[in-house]
Image (cartoon, rainbow, N blue to C red; front, side, top):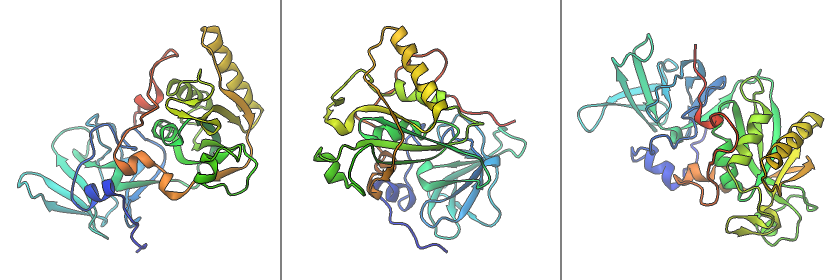
Length: 296
């Protein structure tokens, strides 16, 4: 068994103290990419992506488990059945039956914070880099888009190797706080990600983002190839055609330096929400992170 991971206070509240994350707040509520969901604490594989379905209950739902990995136990409330990781005892959520969501007629209602998603290794992926102020908020929204397989916050665009958070905050390295996104292009397009990027921050602000002022908080798209550059330019032109002022910089992708571990998925680990990022509809259509894929 993998060495148990050190948990944040919120993760401890759910996993050890049997708490519940707020409905529709979890990272995996809408995800539908091919892969496996493992225990957050010990990384034991628990659920397969093909067993995940949209129940619209507010939490990730599965109609089956990987055999022998999930323990079922009468809940302390005397009414429900609790589910736990059989390897380490981590609280996952509860199991329900008779609801008729799928032919198996079973629903594992699981807290996102109890899980970590591992994408299938044979999936062909693309990578994109976004900067829209505090990277905690950038990650909060883009990580929730169905088709996004992995996100990592970090620093890019500067002139210092292996920068630290303190160095970047001192405004002397030239780096942006940024987000690296690995996605499955068969499930979500780069254009859709750029759309969500623009719809979740103030791209007209030139000196930072919200109350976070400084060069590291500027809005920027770092393109990995000519196709990404053309799409980004087209989206900016669309916004300008809609009479929006666009301060977002367009730059070629350069070395991306991952930030310290405590910055990764910051809001998920804290059980909180962004203070300077929020969704507002700009383009036609429903937001990608609000529109889960449907399993056939």
